[in-house]
Length: 315
Image (tube, rainbow, N blue to C red; front, side):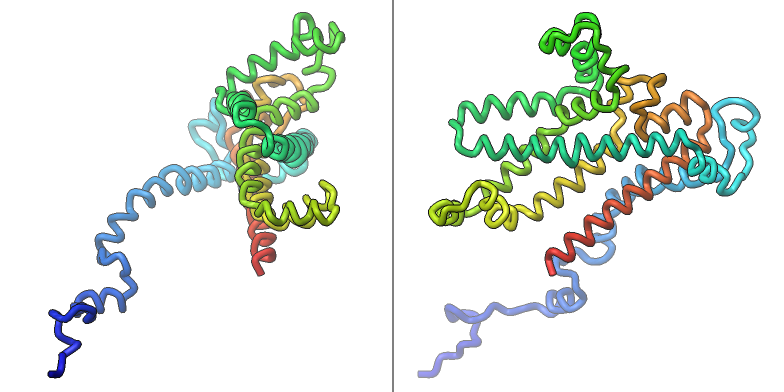
């Protein structure tokens, strides 16, 4: 007796495929929503992006081409000045000083401070007891989740020249850290605030390293430096690049140190504080918008460099 394997009633026979599903698959509509439903599904996200990203960027671009101010005739009737605001910014020694302070701040607190301290904590916590690791992670995360205004107040009290905790611990009563060493003070402050992210990311990355490879390296006589270079770094290179990009962009745009140094201290003025002083305290919104656009371009360059390095690593 011959069995028709194409019959839908026989076990193992392929199910019938409707012509509509085949057409949808041929059109590239894997989800089967159809173009109108797919557009409706993505529309809220597109509206949010346009409202909170594209429109502010276009508004900033327009302001940077005008002499718009908070008060006066320029506030009521701003006029087009072209690239004058950008020329003023790039030739202003105060702007160049703030940009240089920002570079030192990013290198000191992000690329060196947060990266080194975060990786060191993640490395040391690998072999400690779970209770000890939980306590350390709690206090490190606490520094990260505390509001910026609260953490700034705590560190202002720590740096106080008369009754500050730091002077009491070091026996340096009378040292005004925020006045005598303002840039180093905010570097240490931002390192303390932002280390938690690097610690968590590196902790997750180290957990993905095969223990057998580390054990083989130890049995072969490799020291800690050789293990880091030959075993660990090849496995976590992607995490290192991601961490470097994120903490660099966050630190480059952070405003919190301004709460510590204030508007009068120009020795540690970074770009976010400089824009605030120019735009809101000085009232020159056009000039502030031009400087903001310059910062956006710098951020884009940093992101493009990261993508280029990541692409070369994958190839």
